[in-house]
Length: 202
Image (cartoon, rainbow, N blue to C red; front, side):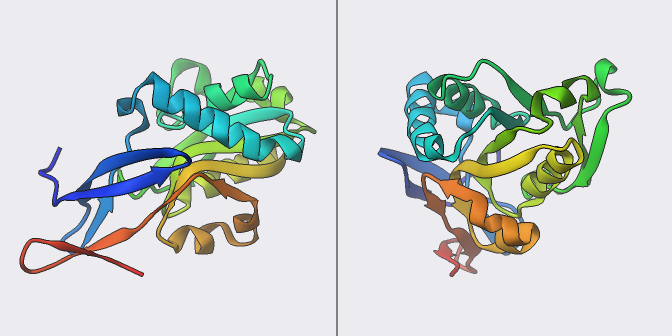
């Protein structure tokens, strides 16, 4: 990983994290939340807190995007008493040759990708209330593609549950679906300064 430019103290629900601030471009940096680096206890509590926010919405099934959203999706499913969930993949696998697909671009990868949904799993979400779970929503690209896949599969997205929202660009990307977002925290974007430091962007 690139050398961090500092750290940011983030509140994710009732939990506090000190996240490294890492550069994305010459001018832009982010507080990097890597779910799988936070430990089982963090994910367990975050999943419980997110599930309590989603419980009143009548969620039938949870969906998520590989890979950082998977641990949260599992814990949210468990806490809601659900035994099944679906995962959208970003890398082609042998069983996804005939998958439903949507183009996407992520802030942390930069290069164009495709989001893939195994057709054999469409029946799990068809006609059902779905909570789309992810770690962080920043540009909204992954969430927009996942919502498109869910609607093509005749699912009814009732919530977008995330550990944190980052900046404001995601609102433009998902439009009216921004009303579905339920978040445990917020993360700012950072502008890189000439002196090597950073300042928060509004």
